[in-house]
Amino acid sequence: MFRIEIIPYTLRFKQPAGTSRGVYHEHRIWYVLLRDVEDPSHVGIGECAPLPDLSCDYSDRYAETLSDYCRLTEQEQQINTELLREHSSILFGLETAMLHYRQRSWQLWDTPFSRGETGITINGLIWMGEFREMMQQIEAKLEKGFGCIKLKIGAIDFEKELALLRFIRSHYSAREVELRVDANGAFAPEEALEKLHRLAELKIHSIEQPIRAGQWDEMSRLCGSSPLSIALDEELIGIHNFTEKRALLDAIRPQYIILKPSLHGGISGCNEWVALANELEIGWWVTSALESNIGLNSIAQWCATLDTPVPQGLGTGSLYYNNLPLPLEIRGDCLWFNPSGTFPDKPLQEYEPYHD
Image 1 (cartoon, one colour):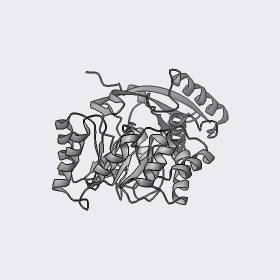
Image 2: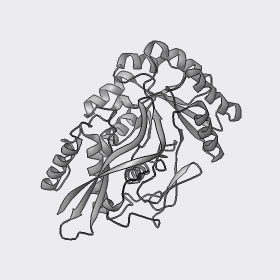
Image 3: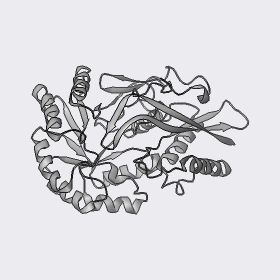
Image 4: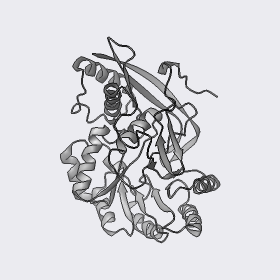
């Protein structure tokens, strides 16, 4: 029998993280800790990391809602997945805490990745910022040997963003470096196709969410006429049951979908998206959503069970001053897990948030 403790935590970014929705300086999260009543050393830790302007389950009462579902999970001694479908970040935290609790290990599945034998290829993420800042990020990623670069676009002038992409293409062909861009819905529908044609001239692999979510007819039209592949991201948020998921993919027919367990229904919800995508011959990859190392480890461990060869979006573990210690490290363009590395060695409450 287990009880659940809830531990609030504030992650502090090393550098402001720019998106089309604004700039993040900190990220408020909650750890859920399952503790065995008879053996207090037997624990399972999960992370609930909603994004206030993005997660469908975030509200001013998030902490109270989390507490209510944790008490229910205590009472039932199991996770009510159906009840939690609409609360992706809470479901993800409880699912992964339960996995940790049952496995009694940070190796949540037995894979070559969890054994430290292979890494997961990831993209190098370039955050939005001033032209010079983004250029410095690009040069640093290329020097480290990343074969896939992803740029968040839509915050600065489109011509300057094209110039950044041209810089990469002037040094590296599409065979040498794969380029992905993420517009976070920044393009207006009437201008999107023209911009996609200009991006295609630079042999861009794909663009995530070119127009804002909820415009199924417009997105379907773009996916059918775009000269480069389109990946859905925010479009998947708030689509909870299997029938709705199939309806969305049938209506839009994207080339790819991007899966983020904290946003897209936890591990169980993302497994449904994977099954549908495979059935409909739609490509996909997995991305973290600004979780700390606790959540990132869970996502990476799950991703490693899916045996997907394309670069994943799992390189956000180094963003924070006060991330918790887990043996995740980037070597070249791969994320690795070291089962003999450093793990949390004291109560989570004692890892104080970073202060300037």
